[in-house]
Length: 390
Image 1 (tube, one colour):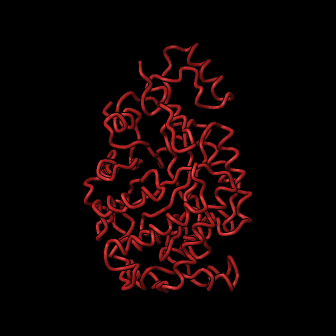
Image 2 (spheres, helix red, strand yellow):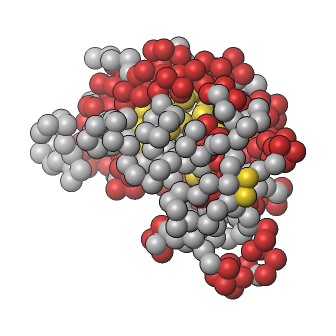
Image 3 (tube, helix red, strand yellow):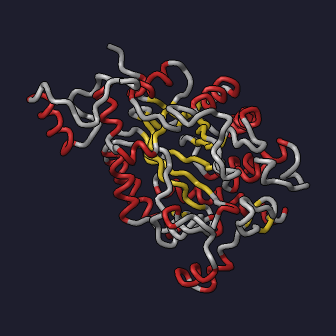
């Protein structure tokens, strides 16, 4: 029996993934002044120990202003490197490739954590937590002075002179990510954050070379890619996450064109998501159901001739395998399903009939699980399910 594609190794530049299961970046909002904590070590570590081929840590901010909440991770100074290096080493020890997403929240910065309501933080909350000087330092900036929703504070439009310095901060954060030992880097260009704010005509009303036409609105993203690549080693892969459809002016056709432009500049994979701009779910994809965003990955892959990663309600092993077998994407990313079951890769391997000795996971797990499987033939694990429609 041929090994399922989901568990076939994959080479990306100088990096080899042991399988094609990717832990999508998920905000944890658990950092302290940008510094990683034990929560990040535990959270990333459990996914590596669960058998994933590639563990991507959450959107980590390239400058102080870019933090979405009090708990965002940061890489805007060298002091942030050691805490992240600790996570890298633990991920690598357990056989997974460590990666990180770099981001900037733009006008969606300075907010309460989602479980605290997600509303804009008032001045007194910031001063109480961080001190008086941090209120001004944590400025809301965006391509244009537009807020969404209307109840949000209005950001300050970035001046033309500020943009090169901001782009360089992405490059410096990439340098720090390399020094921390990460092997794959992703630029966050989706979900209504700063890069996406430049891309979408809904949020970008500039009249200089960074606004107006599709190509002008792509300029910031392209220059971020160039800056990152200038500081990120050639042997290390680079991903770009896009909201392929935001339902308010940026869509698949524009995403295909951007993918074509950034591929020769060193982007290897487009991570295909959607939404996040207008505050409402993307409706053009149809009902939110299993694999609802996969058509975006399929189209970008076909029309831009670049590798893609599918994400979004992919929860069953046979479904993930079928997406790869049908050539609709090259990698499968999971997020909330891994929160539900951090051992999903191990479980998927069992369901697809590979890894009888549980070699995907560390020996303290593998020994006991293999022994149970060998001794108790009639036992079915609690998470076991053969098929999507079972």
